[in-house]
Image (cartoon, rainbow, N blue to C red; front, side):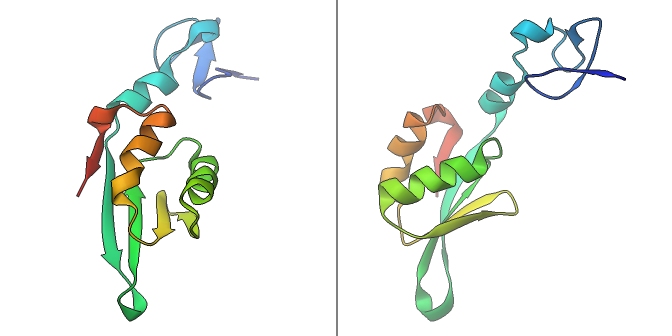
Length: 111
């Protein structure tokens, strides 16, 4: 059976992660991916001219983050196709909330 890195799920051989090249105990693949990604926040108009806030670029823990955002913003929403959709216009509060979830301010682009 092939060895797998417990932190990122990439194949590992002899205790070394094939993705980052570090021992599996200190694998940093998840942190590197989080730093490289851009998060786009924008508005889309849907049926009856209702605004929907779309967040693209949040892939890790997407459902968990969606649930927490819905609670903090007191709105409905969903996570599908790699995007978070929230009912209403929440662009003004999302930057601070995403920063509190551990995302870097420079990664977040609000359009």
